[in-house]
Length: 162
Image 1: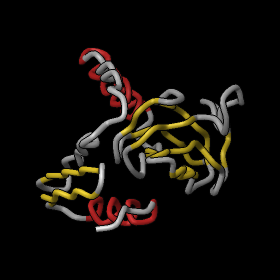
Image 2: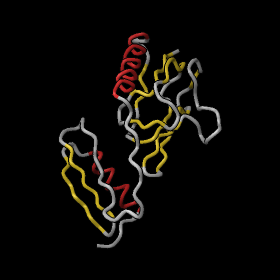
Image 3: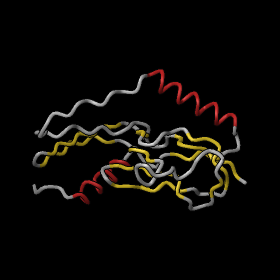
């Protein structure tokens, strides 16, 4: 089997993302990918390359209390603004609040937005997906920070109509 191109990988990940039940193992060259997921709610897991060039340090996991606190904060804010529309992550990846390091955030709490305005960016494997508003309104809450990892369907912010 020949090496996979970037478009091959993107196409495979798209198929995996759309599948409800996945159990796949793919190996080509130095790349080994194993994904096993039962049901739509589980997140895909990818294995590290078979022959890594250098051992990378494991990223530190977020403390459970901080994660629980963030979930509680978002739930409290959603209860505070019951008519607000949640803006959810379209996919799992890295959230960027600004277009480039050192630049101001796309939006801040209290800012008016129009349909089509960019709210942030979600990046997966160097594929940058703009996150845009689907409505006119005001940003009433932002739950994520710049360069924070997000999961598909996480509530990133709330927009109140009007």
